[in-house]
Image (cartoon, one colour):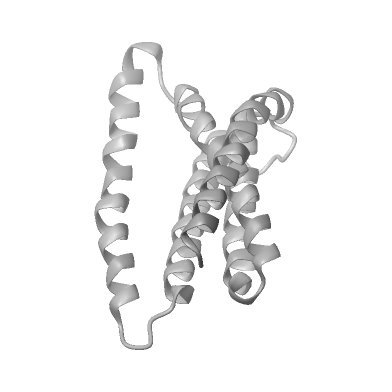
Length: 160
């Protein structure tokens, strides 16, 4: 991939992220913050495994993935702390959000070096790295869904 294309892809992802940060709030107002977060994480996981994974040979799929994933990542970033605010009292918000970031940092500290190692294997391709990212997002989706079910049960119409 030419370096200039990589710059364009980063710009497209950032534009998608900006749109996602704006739209997520409106969706959350209508169907609930947790429901929106779960929907967005499901879309993220699907886009990683369903679009990015087969996009190696198709540049159009790569562009679609970049914009869609940018949208999802922006939405998820803007919704995370809003969801956390529903789980605790105002006076505990700092502790709870700090705990969230502490646990998230473990994923970053492990995931980035493991991803680098996957790319150094013999006959390495981005396929294993993409699958690792999809697995991580799938695990996140399961965790958010578990929290939502513990808080509001299986009722899909519950605005959580």
